[in-house]
Length: 288
Image (cartoon, rainbow, N blue to C red):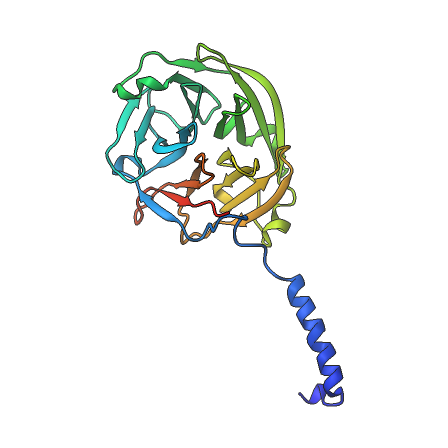
């Protein structure tokens, strides 16, 4: 205190205000998006077969049944969130499968090379479906982990995790597809997610941007994007402009790979398991 002994009360008060102002400038980014607390989930443990759960989806936002993709097999799983009883429908051979979407009565499954498989959702009751469309070469070569189908626009959105054209940037290329009545898909546009402000918005260094999954919030109409390698949840507006970035704590999120919303706006994030943790789906209730 000797250093400031001659300042008097007024001087110390001014120093206090300056210190307070500096602390506010260095304050951390918000811990959660508005209307959610992403650090207090309801946890649903998955059956052992979904230890490596990747993508998840609901049919028209109905949370009674969740559709899930396992990382290594060409099988679509469907199950109630609060039960380990499940159905398993084979649609393709073993491979690296990353995400699932549901649109117009079709299940849409994403392989990491950008190939999309579709089959009628009514066939999830079967052990194996042969009514499968394999949609190849719709997007540039790369590694893809996120697909989302929007009931509002009837469009399918595909987001690249690692593509040649994005190398050396914090951008991720995205592609829009139309779903035909017969289950085939065709190109309908493209978009870009620019995560150049990710570190600033997160309040900490996050490194390269490699998105794992995406979904549209039905209440706010914002895009929510999970980047597993960064342990980050990004929020963008309808035109893909980045608005906020939130840290996903390793204590809660072992390996976040999938994201979905139900029609009430509740948020769900799926996590792959590990040697010490089982695969799970975390639910975060929408709060008005």
